[in-house]
Length: 591
Image: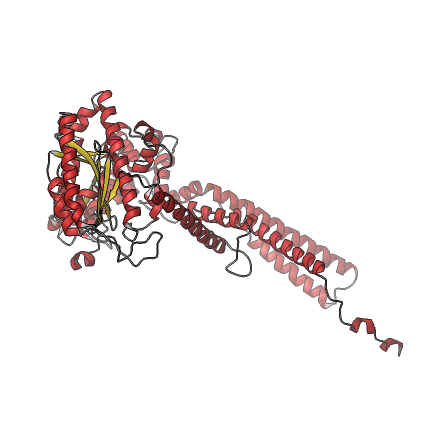
């Protein structure tokens, strides 16, 4: 009976926990949870991140430190979950900051900023432009003679997007410098969107057709000069064409002018330039960018007051930058003459050429493709023959390119060998001990022998940890692979590295401008130069235009090739261009 005696005290209900006990227990649980998350963040911090992911991770960690970190998943904390939480916090923080900036912008609207919302105000607005022109002719006689106009103002369009062919303007802004007045004419804002300071369908704005009728005569007059901050896209001139008229007298592009003045600016955006040089034309303090107020979207859903203040700021900044450039260029060398005689003529010319496009003889291109493809094949064959590219060449290339990887394999293989040898030694010791104890007749002894045989077999299958035994990852020479070309040039042929002439601090480059140096100086590279020449013609020009070999054609639905010219698109100052690829054929057809 003694063994059956129960501890009756154990069956009594536990005493209720006091609030203090509960609080202590809760703190312990929370402390344990915090420690676990701390460890998780330390572990995840060692992961590989893109710049975007790193910002998200940092935001999530800051939220955790602030006590605002709420998990969206269960189990082990992952990089994906942390980045998603960080993305959400960034969006929420950005939205809050954006709302604050919007409130600040609306609260500080200058008295000389005019946002017109009634069509009856248009005649008075046009009269103010006439007054500005009259005053400039009187107070600034001949000031703009070299750039071919007798007056100059800053203009800008706000639009539904960045596609200069199909996006529409939603408003026009202008700065009249002598009158010190800025105007915004809204006519394309839309309601129904959940944004701060949203435009409502009932909010007044101007009639598009009446605004265009009011401003187009002035904007189309060549002797009335305009400055825009357009750059390579020439967006505003394209927008006017889409709206049905042509801007003339566009004689100043502040982005192009800054390229001419300083080709090493970190950024050529209007806001960064204003932030940097604004002190010279009366703009100090923080300058809000488009993203600061509107994020990554069109300004069309926002109300006319907010967009109007932002737009007038833009033309005011644009005028200040233009005047600063205008004066500085005349002080130093012949920059102004260069700009006046050449650059001032480019915006209108570029847009004319871009919209015209180029007629392409597709039959001739197909003939060239048929001619060049066999030449590439023949030149490629000569590359393999000339440089002796065979299995041994490929193996040596693999040993060189993957040298670091091979050393890691050797270290790992040595560890595997040591582990296998240790297992065999321990198992052999065990077998000998059982043999000495006279246990050779037991099943355990037989099991030990089988395990010993298994370990010896595994050890025999392990190759020696040498370079020759390391796996070969590269199985063939690929003529379009930059690493393979680098091995051929720098290691196999021993050509002196001249990368630093093109890219300071870089080595062993296979970029086209570096290869061009070698091709011009090294006769031994003739076969490779031939491949590069014909491959570039095929892949850069012929196939993208024809849309052959699985490449989407860059030709537009009008049967022409359109491009965007970039006056400052190269380090050498030459023109460059990029294909216009934003407009989808089905969209253009529908329009």
